[in-house]
Image 1 (cartoon, rainbow, N blue to C red):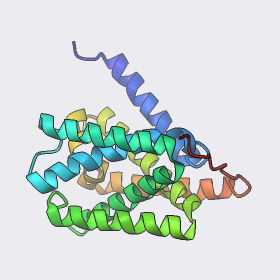
Image 2 (tube, rainbow, N blue to C red):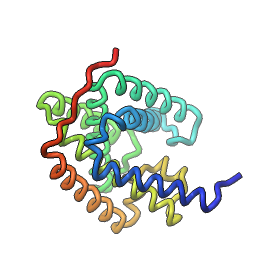
Image 3 (cartoon, helix red, strand yellow):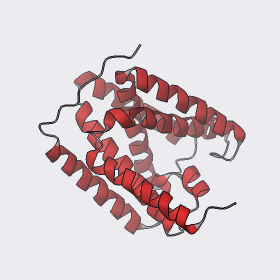
Length: 214
């Protein structure tokens, strides 16, 4: 049975609330969302990798779903038990999707091997810089603001009937917002305002780094 309008409205509102919370309070809630983000990042990376290496359409085959789920589960577990690994995954995901977004803005088809490889290099490079120079706070703030803005935009796109859930999952927010400059501008404004707000409101807030759970 398809979901009712009320159920869809509730789902969109919940997603919007989560997105807004990430935009403006992502750094404060980072320890809570880290394993979740690890799963999402791993799931997307697994599906992207299958598409780049073997040409499988993202989430269009059982194989891409299985690989995405396995990679996501591994990343989630490691992020939960090992904080620095989680930070590296988070920073790597930020680097990966920033690189993908840049290439998309330049008109490059991101769904093939070369852009995927560039994204992986960007991910590894940013993860190394974050851990080497201990700039975790600012990458977390930037990453959570971007992710939260993406969730908000995706929720609005779905609510306005621009894309269905399958299209959003396969295209990802970075592609969906490219369909209209107004969505892209909204995304940039939301993320920028979130970054500014988080920096101002967390000047005296210190994220207590947890010890490894194993």
